[in-house]
Image 1: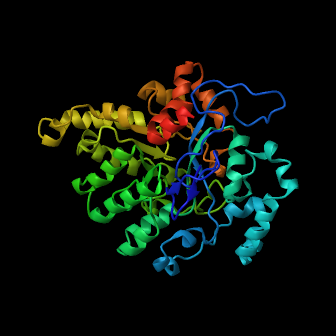
Image 2 (image 1 turned 180 degrees about the vertical axis):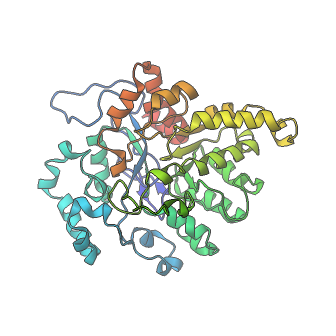
Length: 429
């Protein structure tokens, strides 16, 4: 249904029903996307997920070394250094990382050939949740993504980049606006008010189904600045969401927290470049502050049909965050005119307009009990290692004896609500 154009969130329709693209329109099921229980004919493929329509709110492509460079504006391509995967984590399932890094072009040519081989494909059904990163079906070959969706049994995926959110954020903060805007299209840097509005309009015209913005504050002004209202208006009018994804915030915590006189532990990949327990604690900070500021400054009041997705930044923080906003509202509404102009309570804006993806290690059942059924969305993080091999099983265990209506919202309805016009098309398929 989509092809990637430039950076993560740009795509346009193409011929195949179930292809996916980096944060573009969700891949569309060929068997229908209404939220209902489905049966399968005898002898049919047995996917990882079956019996229920499931939409995946967080999945990824694995970008090859020159992916962004190949899609960026020609005038700035020479400024974009090809990826080198210095930690080697993402290459571990595809061979010896050091050997692959010696000639990445040749290594990816060999890997593509392997992915297309009968031997590789003969075990895909059994291996769909075990193969991760570049070893996974559809990770970097666009033509293979529809088959991955069939094997997973998901009706659609919202697909993001893997390696570029931090780079896009750093370029936005670099002062080189030509580089910041030339490397991202439906990733919308908010640093320049006029260029942000123009880029949002261009992205919608090209067929973007979501606009990706950094979770943290842009340089020089608040994400709630009234000069950014044209960005939100463009998204609302097009019926597409604004999405915040982990990785676009710079350092989550002061690096001195790691200077404790002890050895630095490896991350969960066994390398150095991903989260550890200490900086994991900082993940909710940027989206929580950004969204609270947008709520208090009236962005969600002015744009009541706008939807915002918080992706791969957990959800365990949402209940306490909404209560803290309610406390702030009570404390300051007598003195702040901006709060007096709001027609809803902070929690009501969240319930109406914000959708969040929990981590599979979080107690999603408890989150839903505390915050209601309208906020959380299923996600697999496919094909990343941190998504695990059994996200469905983990979420199901956490949901416990929650009624089917709650599960329907978690696996299906909340995603369709987030996706707006794309969600309407999916539900009508």
